[in-house]
Amino acid sequence: MATVVVLLIVMVVVLLGVVAVNRAQRTRSNTQLEDAKADARRVIERLGGQVYNLGGTDAASKQALADAGERFNAAGSQIEQATTPAQARLAKETALEGLYYVSAARAAMGMDPGPAVPELDGQRSAGRVTEDRAIDFDGRRVEASPTPSAATPNYYPGGRVAGRPVPAGWYSEPWWKTALVAGAWGVGSAVLFNALFSGMSGVGYDSAAFENGYGDGYQAGLDAADGGYDGAGYDQSGYDQGGYDQGGYDPGYDQGGYDPGADLGGQDFGDYGNFGGFDGFDSDF
Image (cartoon, rainbow, N blue to C red; front, side, top):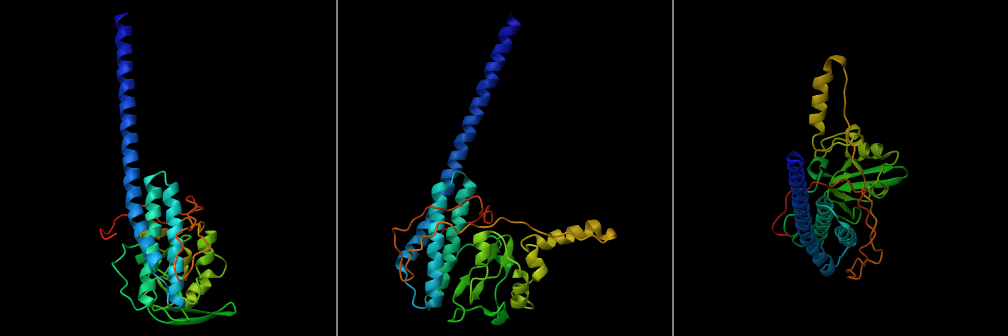
């Protein structure tokens, strides 16, 4: 009988311990989520303030502000739907991307671009346009430039789109847009990339690396693969990333201003696998 009583006491103690641990974990998770949400909302509010108060003066600045407004809507939708710290960080990353568009718009209008924005995921490895390029591709003229102009009004801050790098710069058209929306690159994208960026000093990889998802750690992976399989002549490379669903943008956004009644709904978390794990935040935001 005494043995049974001892066993019951032990079971009760273990059960109480499990309950206490689970409760502590839930409390810690809730605190982390709220902290991540607060961090993201600070950046989103900063972006909203810029979008509300700026109006473009030319095609480049108007387009950049339209893109900033799009990111503002997307980030707002994401933070409302966030149920994990990772999802909250994703919303923050979207807002940071929007701030890059704001900085680009300000620069295009001859204004001070404002405080530096924290680096985006994959931005550094994607490179940047360092010279003017113009090619004929699929019956149309495609141009790239390090500076905005009437011929290159479409800005991209640099980073990864549907698992592939896109260099920062100004372009005649958003050639990455289809992949951004669909989450997959179309046939011919590597050919366009090769023609537009081959030999450019600011883009340190070729079209094959582009197709294989060149990014942070890419070369290290190649070196490791080569070291492990050199005798057999085996080479392994590749990097797979999810795409970003561009839902949630309100087409009522006015390029000359911003309608605060914009709809923040409709952003899909599941297909935006590109920005997770962002670390680092500038106290200015």
